[in-house]
Image (cartoon, rainbow, N blue to C red):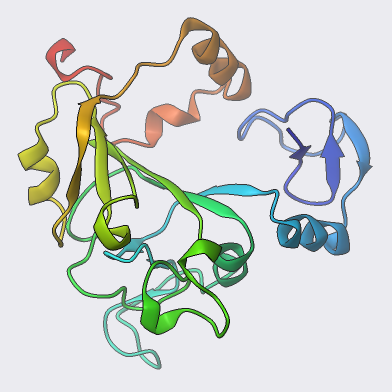
Length: 218
């Protein structure tokens, strides 16, 4: 695994999530300027976990703008940023902290920032084999794109979540894995690693009201 400070250095030890007010004293290992960053992106070895504002049935995502027109959106977001290059260069997975039809939209995303399994938007010379969307992880379930014709597919439900709730909060029809089961809980070792990476418990703010991992424990 290669770690960076998200700016310009590779690290031998990870920086804690939001736990540093400066980069002084971090475990710098080597320079990681923009040229090397893009060499890494284009190598295909990278796997990015990103948080899109919209996801459509094709796995296309949006972080740029919502509603209105391209020239005058109702809500201006980040812009496309690195999503176009990410989507054609390496594996990607999506994290959605609130599974709803506002995120998993009925039609296409308001602005298509990254390509997915939509044959009409594939770059010239590209096929589905060149697109690698691994997982979609939400507060309700885990999904992939291994359904019929690359349809988004539910592969596990979080403890206490019903499949009907997932479909109700999705703006398009989902495929379902033949061996649909319950999402595995993290191991004690994994929880320890997470606590070391996130000593300020920033993760507790990612899901509204920080619900328990098992609904019956509420």
